[in-house]
Length: 180
Length: 160
View 1 (cartoon, rainbow over the protein chains, first blue to last red):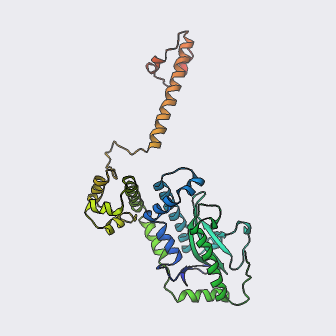
View 2: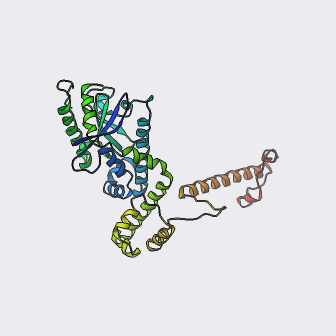
View 3: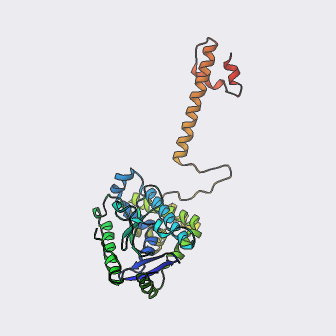
């Protein structure tokens, strides 16, 4: 596992994990995947029932277009942050992964960012590390719990894996490790 | 910056930075045509499903390689008119329409909305006409509705 820089600012920085078996880092992978109609068409064919249970009946191509538009908006919002030295902090982009932690912030906290459309199914996952944020991956979440589907369960696994990696690489005693 | 963040910065410095920003900048710059390319890709994928075809079947029908078809459905292809025309022919779908000045594209939703507006307008005119005949002590006749064209002076007509 490696860490790559997405952007570094004076007040905060964004990094992403590059897993050994992947050709690209976690954010670049998401950008590729969420702009690929063929892959998304396959995904929503597989999880059409999950989608319709939440959002009602729709054609797969309409869902895919919605996903791509939402992803573009999400990445553009993050891109705008990267270019902005004075305005918003990355902390406003990410929310605690666990809703019960709303308003709380601590080292090695697991985080998520939502797509920009209302009731979005897109998620980017990250770990807070001081004023830096490390993206571990992302998913199209169509069920209540991340453990409900294999692809979201894998994201939970990655969040835990990266948190352990960062803990190992951090200064001893500096973090308050909370097991959630 | 804390020591731990410094350490993270050093870890990242060992690797080339992500190309993510360049990719987002490219998509932003080319958003309009990429959106059209995505839509064409999705129409092709839907048509393949409808016909029960795999991408290799389309490749055979077009006389191209499977890899070329794969490029067409990635939403990044700047389609040539000849490719679009061939795709329309073999998949029996319409992917593109060149509109004359007096033509416009309407979705099913827009047509439904327009019909709904016209029905509402028809009933409004019918009610006004019936009120007019009632005032004149005549039996309402719905068939005469279009004979009375409401105008800005409808108020005066109703005043009888």
